[in-house]
Image (cartoon, rainbow, N blue to C red; front, top):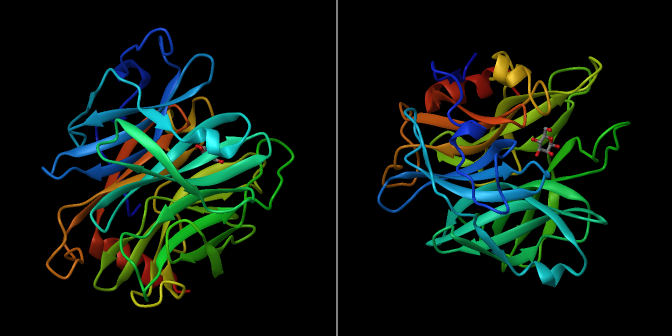
Length: 324
Ligand code: BMA
Protein backbone atom coordinates (compact mmCIF):
# COMPACT_ATOMS: atom_id res chain seq x y z
CA UNK A 1 0.00 0.00 0.00
CA UNK A 2 1.24 3.52 -0.74
CA UNK A 3 0.46 4.77 2.77
CA UNK A 4 2.36 2.83 5.44
CA UNK A 5 0.84 2.90 8.90
CA UNK A 6 3.15 3.30 11.89
CA UNK A 7 4.29 0.01 13.39
CA UNK A 8 2.97 0.22 16.93
CA UNK A 9 -0.80 0.38 16.52
CA UNK A 10 -3.17 3.33 16.91
CA UNK A 11 -1.81 6.78 17.74
CA UNK A 12 -4.67 7.44 20.16
CA UNK A 13 -7.40 5.39 21.76
CA UNK A 14 -10.11 6.30 24.24
CA UNK A 15 -7.71 5.36 27.04
CA UNK A 16 -5.63 8.43 26.14
CA UNK A 17 -8.56 10.80 26.65
CA UNK A 18 -8.74 12.35 30.13
CA UNK A 19 -12.14 12.66 31.78
CA UNK A 20 -13.66 16.14 31.84
CA UNK A 21 -16.55 15.62 34.25
CA UNK A 22 -19.47 15.93 34.15
CA UNK A 23 -19.66 16.06 30.33
CA UNK A 24 -17.06 13.48 29.49
CA UNK A 25 -16.42 10.47 31.69
CA UNK A 26 -14.89 7.27 30.32
CA UNK A 27 -15.39 8.32 26.68
CA UNK A 28 -16.42 5.81 24.03
CA UNK A 29 -14.17 6.83 21.17
CA UNK A 30 -11.77 9.33 19.61
CA UNK A 31 -11.54 9.63 15.83
CA UNK A 32 -11.44 11.79 12.65
CA UNK A 33 -9.15 14.58 13.95
CA UNK A 34 -8.10 17.75 12.19
CA UNK A 35 -4.32 18.32 12.17
CA UNK A 36 -1.94 21.24 11.83
CA UNK A 37 1.49 22.47 12.86
CA UNK A 38 1.40 25.40 15.27
CA UNK A 39 3.69 28.39 14.73
CA UNK A 40 6.41 26.77 16.85
CA UNK A 41 6.31 23.68 14.60
CA UNK A 42 4.56 21.44 17.15
CA UNK A 43 1.87 19.23 15.67
CA UNK A 44 -1.61 19.65 17.10
CA UNK A 45 -4.66 17.49 16.59
CA UNK A 46 -8.22 18.65 17.08
CA UNK A 47 -9.83 15.42 18.23
CA UNK A 48 -13.40 14.30 17.76
CA UNK A 49 -14.25 12.68 21.08
CA UNK A 50 -17.50 10.90 21.76
CA UNK A 51 -19.06 10.43 25.18
CA UNK A 52 -21.01 7.40 26.38
CA UNK A 53 -24.12 9.45 25.60
CA UNK A 54 -22.75 9.76 22.05
CA UNK A 55 -22.40 13.48 22.36
CA UNK A 56 -19.57 14.96 20.29
CA UNK A 57 -16.76 17.11 21.69
CA UNK A 58 -13.49 18.52 20.40
CA UNK A 59 -10.28 18.30 22.45
CA UNK A 60 -6.72 19.36 21.64
CA UNK A 61 -3.73 17.03 21.54
CA UNK A 62 -0.13 18.15 21.17
CA UNK A 63 3.13 16.65 19.97
CA UNK A 64 1.40 14.07 17.80
CA UNK A 65 3.76 12.77 15.21
CA UNK A 66 4.85 9.16 14.91
CA UNK A 67 5.72 8.95 18.61
CA UNK A 68 2.65 9.83 20.67
CA UNK A 69 0.28 12.50 21.87
CA UNK A 70 -0.59 14.47 24.95
CA UNK A 71 -4.29 15.22 25.23
CA UNK A 72 -5.36 18.34 27.08
CA UNK A 73 -7.99 17.96 29.82
CA UNK A 74 -10.28 20.58 28.33
CA UNK A 75 -13.21 20.67 25.95
CA UNK A 76 -12.99 23.14 23.08
CA UNK A 77 -15.70 25.80 23.20
CA UNK A 78 -17.87 26.25 20.11
CA UNK A 79 -19.56 29.64 19.72
CA UNK A 80 -22.07 31.12 17.30
CA UNK A 81 -24.24 28.04 16.77
CA UNK A 82 -27.36 30.00 17.75
CA UNK A 83 -27.14 31.63 14.28
CA UNK A 84 -28.28 28.32 12.81
CA UNK A 85 -31.74 28.49 14.37
CA UNK A 86 -32.82 25.22 15.97
CA UNK A 87 -30.96 22.49 17.74
CA UNK A 88 -27.39 21.59 16.73
CA UNK A 89 -26.78 17.91 17.47
CA UNK A 90 -23.15 17.46 16.47
CA UNK A 91 -20.22 19.49 15.15
CA UNK A 92 -17.65 17.00 13.84
CA UNK A 93 -14.92 15.88 11.44
CA UNK A 94 -12.84 19.10 11.65
CA UNK A 95 -10.50 19.98 8.79
CA UNK A 96 -7.91 22.68 9.59
CA UNK A 97 -6.56 25.22 7.08
CA UNK A 98 -4.10 28.08 7.57
CA UNK A 99 -5.18 30.79 5.13
CA UNK A 100 -3.87 34.36 4.87
CA UNK A 101 -2.38 34.12 8.37
CA UNK A 102 -5.57 32.86 10.05
CA UNK A 103 -6.81 29.47 11.20
CA UNK A 104 -10.02 28.07 9.78
CA UNK A 105 -11.73 24.87 10.85
CA UNK A 106 -14.34 23.42 8.52
CA UNK A 107 -16.76 20.98 10.16
CA UNK A 108 -19.91 19.03 9.48
CA UNK A 109 -22.85 20.28 11.54
CA UNK A 110 -25.84 18.00 12.15
CA UNK A 111 -29.18 19.80 12.36
CA UNK A 112 -32.72 18.39 12.35
CA UNK A 113 -32.91 19.34 8.66
CA UNK A 114 -29.70 17.53 7.68
CA UNK A 115 -25.96 18.24 7.71
CA UNK A 116 -24.35 21.56 6.83
CA UNK A 117 -20.75 22.55 6.20
CA UNK A 118 -19.65 25.19 8.71
CA UNK A 119 -16.55 27.38 8.57
CA UNK A 120 -15.18 28.35 11.99
CA UNK A 121 -12.43 30.78 12.93
CA UNK A 122 -10.08 30.38 15.88
CA UNK A 123 -6.91 31.87 17.34
CA UNK A 124 -5.62 28.92 19.31
CA UNK A 125 -8.25 26.14 19.00
CA UNK A 126 -9.50 26.64 22.57
CA UNK A 127 -12.62 28.24 21.08
CA UNK A 128 -14.13 27.96 17.61
CA UNK A 129 -16.43 30.73 16.36
CA UNK A 130 -18.88 30.00 13.56
CA UNK A 131 -18.20 32.32 10.63
CA UNK A 132 -20.54 30.90 8.00
CA UNK A 133 -22.30 27.87 6.65
CA UNK A 134 -21.54 27.26 3.00
CA UNK A 135 -25.15 26.86 1.92
CA UNK A 136 -28.57 25.62 2.81
CA UNK A 137 -28.25 22.08 1.57
CA UNK A 138 -27.32 18.70 3.02
CA UNK A 139 -23.53 18.35 2.65
CA UNK A 140 -20.39 17.20 4.49
CA UNK A 141 -16.63 16.83 4.01
CA UNK A 142 -15.89 20.53 3.47
CA UNK A 143 -12.21 21.49 3.13
CA UNK A 144 -10.72 24.92 2.42
CA UNK A 145 -7.70 25.43 0.15
CA UNK A 146 -4.80 27.14 1.96
CA UNK A 147 -4.61 30.02 -0.53
CA UNK A 148 -6.75 31.88 -3.06
CA UNK A 149 -6.48 30.52 -6.59
CA UNK A 150 -7.44 32.73 -9.54
CA UNK A 151 -8.49 35.43 -7.06
CA UNK A 152 -11.06 33.22 -5.30
CA UNK A 153 -11.23 31.29 -2.05
CA UNK A 154 -11.80 27.63 -2.89
CA UNK A 155 -13.51 24.85 -0.99
CA UNK A 156 -14.28 21.22 -1.68
CA UNK A 157 -17.59 19.90 -0.45
CA UNK A 158 -19.61 16.71 -0.86
CA UNK A 159 -23.38 17.18 -1.22
CA UNK A 160 -25.38 14.37 0.38
CA UNK A 161 -27.51 13.20 -2.52
CA UNK A 162 -27.30 9.44 -1.96
CA UNK A 163 -29.65 7.98 0.65
CA UNK A 164 -28.46 4.53 1.74
CA UNK A 165 -30.99 2.04 3.16
CA UNK A 166 -29.29 2.37 6.58
CA UNK A 167 -27.43 5.36 8.02
CA UNK A 168 -27.21 9.01 7.10
CA UNK A 169 -27.29 10.50 3.60
CA UNK A 170 -23.99 10.34 1.73
CA UNK A 171 -22.79 11.33 -1.72
CA UNK A 172 -20.83 10.31 -4.79
CA UNK A 173 -19.51 13.66 -6.06
CA UNK A 174 -16.92 16.02 -4.59
CA UNK A 175 -17.65 19.55 -5.83
CA UNK A 176 -15.32 22.51 -6.20
CA UNK A 177 -16.84 25.71 -4.81
CA UNK A 178 -15.61 29.33 -4.88
CA UNK A 179 -16.14 32.49 -2.85
CA UNK A 180 -15.01 36.13 -2.73
CA UNK A 181 -15.49 36.54 1.01
CA UNK A 182 -15.59 33.05 2.65
CA UNK A 183 -19.24 33.74 3.50
CA UNK A 184 -21.08 33.14 0.23
CA UNK A 185 -20.23 30.09 -1.85
CA UNK A 186 -21.11 29.06 -5.39
CA UNK A 187 -20.43 25.70 -6.98
CA UNK A 188 -17.86 25.81 -9.80
CA UNK A 189 -18.54 22.21 -10.85
CA UNK A 190 -18.05 18.55 -10.02
CA UNK A 191 -14.45 17.55 -9.30
CA UNK A 192 -14.39 13.82 -8.53
CA UNK A 193 -17.21 11.34 -8.95
CA UNK A 194 -17.61 7.96 -7.32
CA UNK A 195 -16.65 4.91 -9.36
CA UNK A 196 -19.57 2.56 -8.91
CA UNK A 197 -18.75 -1.15 -8.53
CA UNK A 198 -15.20 -0.38 -7.28
CA UNK A 199 -13.46 0.86 -4.13
CA UNK A 200 -14.66 4.48 -4.20
CA UNK A 201 -18.38 4.44 -4.99
CA UNK A 202 -19.13 7.18 -2.46
CA UNK A 203 -16.47 9.86 -2.04
CA UNK A 204 -15.54 12.82 0.16
CA UNK A 205 -12.47 15.02 0.58
CA UNK A 206 -10.07 14.06 3.36
CA UNK A 207 -7.66 16.68 4.74
CA UNK A 208 -7.28 20.03 2.91
CA UNK A 209 -5.18 19.79 -0.27
CA UNK A 210 -1.42 20.45 -0.06
CA UNK A 211 0.69 22.12 -2.72
CA UNK A 212 3.39 20.22 -4.61
CA UNK A 213 5.22 21.29 -7.76
CA UNK A 214 3.16 18.66 -9.63
CA UNK A 215 -0.21 19.97 -8.46
CA UNK A 216 -2.50 20.08 -5.45
CA UNK A 217 -2.40 16.76 -3.67
CA UNK A 218 -5.75 15.73 -2.26
CA UNK A 219 -6.24 12.72 -0.01
CA UNK A 220 -9.87 11.61 -0.09
CA UNK A 221 -12.02 8.79 1.22
CA UNK A 222 -13.97 6.34 -0.87
CA UNK A 223 -16.62 3.91 0.28
CA UNK A 224 -17.30 0.55 -1.34
CA UNK A 225 -20.93 -0.40 -0.78
CA UNK A 226 -21.46 -3.23 -3.27
CA UNK A 227 -20.00 -5.88 -0.95
CA UNK A 228 -22.93 -5.66 1.40
CA UNK A 229 -21.60 -3.32 4.10
CA UNK A 230 -19.58 -0.14 3.78
CA UNK A 231 -15.78 -0.22 3.54
CA UNK A 232 -14.15 3.20 4.04
CA UNK A 233 -10.73 3.56 2.40
CA UNK A 234 -8.30 6.34 1.44
CA UNK A 235 -7.14 7.38 -2.02
CA UNK A 236 -5.48 10.44 -3.55
CA UNK A 237 -5.90 12.78 -6.49
CA UNK A 238 -3.69 15.40 -8.10
CA UNK A 239 -5.30 18.69 -9.14
CA UNK A 240 -3.90 21.31 -11.49
CA UNK A 241 -2.18 24.10 -9.54
CA UNK A 242 -3.66 27.02 -11.50
CA UNK A 243 -7.00 25.33 -12.21
CA UNK A 244 -7.82 22.94 -9.33
CA UNK A 245 -11.06 21.98 -11.09
CA UNK A 246 -8.89 19.92 -13.43
CA UNK A 247 -7.92 16.44 -12.17
CA UNK A 248 -4.47 15.39 -13.40
CA UNK A 249 -4.50 11.94 -11.86
CA UNK A 250 -6.26 9.78 -9.31
CA UNK A 251 -5.12 6.57 -7.67
CA UNK A 252 -6.67 3.54 -9.31
CA UNK A 253 -6.55 1.54 -6.08
CA UNK A 254 -7.01 2.70 -2.54
CA UNK A 255 -3.77 3.72 -0.81
CA UNK A 256 -4.90 2.67 2.68
CA UNK A 257 -7.67 0.25 3.61
CA UNK A 258 -8.86 -1.27 6.87
CA UNK A 259 -6.60 -4.22 7.70
CA UNK A 260 -5.56 -3.95 11.34
CA UNK A 261 -7.98 -5.28 13.97
CA UNK A 262 -8.57 -1.75 15.26
CA UNK A 263 -9.56 -0.58 11.77
CA UNK A 264 -11.72 -3.63 11.08
CA UNK A 265 -13.54 -3.64 14.42
CA UNK A 266 -15.12 -0.92 16.49
CA UNK A 267 -18.09 1.36 16.66
CA UNK A 268 -18.36 1.38 12.85
CA UNK A 269 -16.35 -1.54 11.47
CA UNK A 270 -14.15 -1.37 8.36
CA UNK A 271 -13.29 2.32 8.40
CA UNK A 272 -10.19 4.36 7.72
CA UNK A 273 -11.30 7.98 7.40
CA UNK A 274 -8.48 10.50 6.70
CA UNK A 275 -9.06 14.01 8.06
CA UNK A 276 -5.63 15.36 9.03
CA UNK A 277 -2.32 15.78 7.28
CA UNK A 278 1.06 16.84 8.67
CA UNK A 279 4.14 17.71 6.63
CA UNK A 280 7.45 19.43 7.12
CA UNK A 281 7.42 23.15 6.23
CA UNK A 282 7.08 23.90 2.49
CA UNK A 283 9.82 25.42 0.34
CA UNK A 284 9.97 29.14 -0.44
CA UNK A 285 7.55 28.79 -3.36
CA UNK A 286 5.01 27.16 -1.03
CA UNK A 287 5.38 23.64 -2.44
CA UNK A 288 6.48 20.54 -0.56
CA UNK A 289 9.74 18.98 -1.66
CA UNK A 290 9.33 15.63 -3.48
CA UNK A 291 11.06 13.74 -0.66
CA UNK A 292 8.84 15.28 2.07
CA UNK A 293 6.99 12.79 4.23
CA UNK A 294 3.25 13.27 4.29
CA UNK A 295 1.69 12.00 7.54
CA UNK A 296 -1.98 11.21 7.15
CA UNK A 297 -3.99 11.11 10.37
CA UNK A 298 -7.20 9.13 10.23
CA UNK A 299 -10.09 7.82 12.24
CA UNK A 300 -10.20 4.03 12.50
CA UNK A 301 -13.55 2.24 12.88
CA UNK A 302 -14.96 5.50 14.37
CA UNK A 303 -13.17 4.36 17.53
CA UNK A 304 -9.51 5.41 17.53
CA UNK A 305 -6.89 7.40 15.60
CA UNK A 306 -4.26 6.00 13.24
CA UNK A 307 -1.37 7.56 11.35
CA UNK A 308 0.28 6.49 8.11
CA UNK A 309 2.88 8.05 5.82
CA UNK A 310 4.22 8.26 2.28
CA UNK A 311 6.51 10.63 0.41
CA UNK A 312 5.16 13.31 -1.91
CA UNK A 313 6.90 11.47 -4.77
CA UNK A 314 5.10 8.20 -4.02
CA UNK A 315 1.70 9.87 -3.70
CA UNK A 316 2.11 11.90 -6.89
CA UNK A 317 3.30 8.80 -8.78
CA UNK A 318 0.29 6.78 -7.59
CA UNK A 319 -2.06 9.54 -8.79
CA UNK A 320 -0.33 9.78 -12.17
CA UNK A 321 -0.34 5.98 -12.64
CA UNK A 322 -4.07 5.90 -12.02
CA UNK A 323 -4.75 8.37 -14.84
CA UNK A 324 -7.92 10.45 -14.93
C1 BMA B 1 -19.17 9.28 7.46
C2 BMA B 1 -19.06 10.36 8.51
C3 BMA B 1 -17.81 10.12 9.35
C4 BMA B 1 -17.67 8.69 9.80
C5 BMA B 1 -17.85 7.74 8.62
C6 BMA B 1 -17.80 6.27 9.01
O1 BMA B 1 -20.37 9.38 6.78
O2 BMA B 1 -20.18 10.29 9.36
O3 BMA B 1 -17.86 10.96 10.47
O4 BMA B 1 -16.39 8.49 10.34
O5 BMA B 1 -19.09 8.01 8.02
O6 BMA B 1 -18.81 5.95 9.93
